[in-house]
Length: 202
Image (cartoon, rainbow, N blue to C red; front, side, top):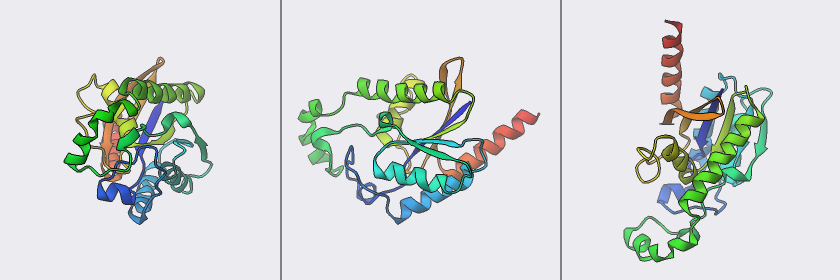
């Protein structure tokens, strides 16, 4: 089975480079259009179950996608919520402010706890909906922790800057997760999927 792991569409805070964390910032107009583009390419997959973080920017992305997929169901799962950035939340990515507040790292959700939480959430849903492809909508730091775990640290946290509304493709076989592709724009995803289908026909 496949799990399509999406980052939510753009928000005004994304646009100005502000750390969002658990702050509940909604999609802006660009973000809604990005979600529409994701819906356009995902409606042709077999996925009908959509699991989302409870934060509005993710939930709105999920609802927009569901609106284009007949028979889809949206389920909220706290396990997909963004990392708690503690005292960094709400700050811009200005280097001085970032490093001046790094002494407050202890207020952030620890990286190992974040990875365990998100990976556990994905595995639990994969087992629950075994044999059914799933769409899951989450956040940048949360998704990067998964990519880091699945690539042994070669990609993901600290190395990969995820695009808004990007699609990563996970596989689930024999109770193990694998990474097929990551950080794909809707257009890149469509090309990747078309290429895979063609290879499978050969």
